[in-house]
Image (cartoon, rainbow, N blue to C red; front, side, top):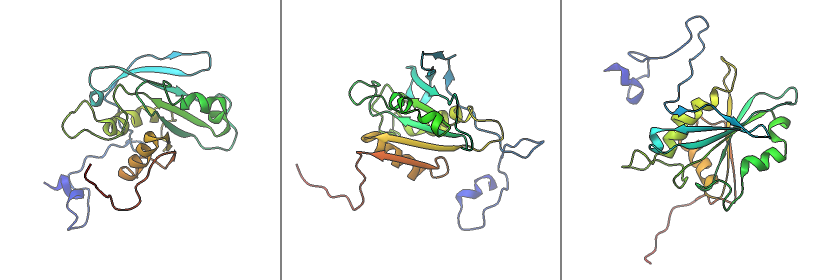
Length: 204
């Protein structure tokens, strides 16, 4: 009964009955493990690694997650993870390729960033479908992709996680940090709508 204490705000929150995972020797929290299956990567001429992944939150169809790590990082910068969110399921089909644009700007080395670019086989609105468990992209990001990204950081390190998106993926970045403030340190969006007042509905 007390294991749900954090969900009963009427009384002080305690750890009664709560399972917490820490390293017994150091006290450092153990990282969550991704539930998705991850293939061995292929690497292109620019050092971009492509992983084929399958997640229950996207159904049985595999998708690709690309990773570009810094090769000659500038000294003094902390290690950060930047999630580059695509606008559409087909990478680069209409709106370009965010990871490749960042690579051309040498962002990964200039700011010591590991770039992580997921792909989707369904429209990436970065939310969870209320009834279809295979269309839950927010759960995919938070429960599968974040633990996968954290594996690129040294053990015992708490990484800074950023996300960036264009158009509706920018809206997705804003939604992700608002609903998961303890997951992302910061997000950026451009050319994306942000509803700042009450919604208005009209008959069409």
